[in-house]
Image 1 (cartoon, rainbow, N blue to C red):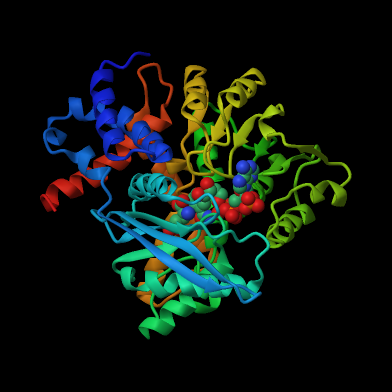
Image 2: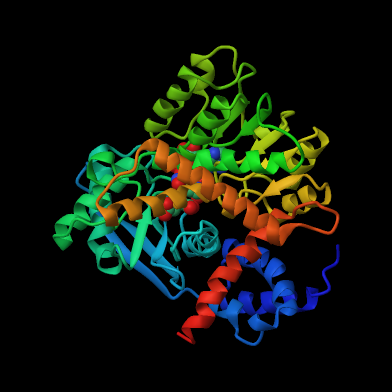
Length: 451
Ligand code: NDP
Ligand code: 2IT
């Protein structure tokens, strides 16, 4: 479908490219939002002439810093740390930290930008931010991870705070790393506060936060399936990745009677025809804790499974695909294969895992397709609930948190459908999520003046 606002979108993207050269991932994320929001602005005078999108694509603050530390051999290592404080119109900056060798400013700006809209969708008062480092956790000892985390916090602490900016985990940052980061913050500030989320249960963490992103993805998938009178029970699901999000998705989908048949790592993917359940799910956690880049050992443990080196799970015939590894891991050829195999729904657990070409294929086939900023918002939503519990100095039970998460995912679905429903009844979740997120942030920015 040719967009009648294409010229305006192209002009805006030229402007964005000129200001952000060499940032392909960031521009990809901006384009997705611009395509949805520019036509909406054109039809809603209230949002015109305020340079809202121009303001939104400019981070309020970009912090980049040296992280020197000493490895186990006594050698000095130097990494680069970042925090992108993107938008605080609706609350303190909020978003994860990523430790991965591929981390650069473009990737963190794409993630921080997406986080603005995602956080707005959660219904909770959180602005958007993201940070991290090009530190590679692979093969590092526990002591090295601790020293790196402390060195990282030695600079970050002066830029964050429970009412300013509240980081959490992302790729390469889980409970262990958050623990070390929190310890160092507390030591430097002499302050015990909810400055980070994803903390251990003994020191202010929330029940269900580790599971939240994956559980939320599955709750969102249930809502999507309801719109076509389908259920998740007995569905065959392909999942990519084998980290925190993949684990949560597999746990909840299995509880609800679906069968997850794949996981993947950078080395290839596993196909398990019997489904990944029970002790196999526990095995995933052990595999992840090795800090190695591999899923191949799964097939040695469980001989009914096959390992496909260097391949991606999208070649398998499944009802639902849930990419949960990383950005741009599902391309146009993968999308075409999934459609050919009759996939009903693609529900993103990772951030921006489908390329723009892949999304185009899903949309023209009119399957159910949801962007990560809607379907993976459960993680940051429970981070928001962790902040609430920290402020109250009180803990909700697992059931209470799970119930609130479920409710939030339904709200996100409703709000996305509100703006994404097309005249023929098909829901464009990508357009819906971007407009719904934009409206909340834009209204707050308009009310607060030019700041
Ligand atoms: P983890 O570090 O726990 O896991 C990431 C997983 O993806 C690892 O298994 C990683 O392996 C794997 N992976 C990395 N590159 C590839 C690749 N090229 N092909 C296949 N697998 C790969 O991170 P999370 O589970 O936390 O994050 C996964 C995704 O979900 C990311 O896009 C993240 O931004 C997003 N997300 C995370 C949330 C959270 O709360 N944690 C919330 C919302 C979204 P390895 O590390 O060995 O390379
Ligand atoms: O991408 C994400 O939403 C996250 N990594 C979680 C952020 C958070 O603050 O919990």
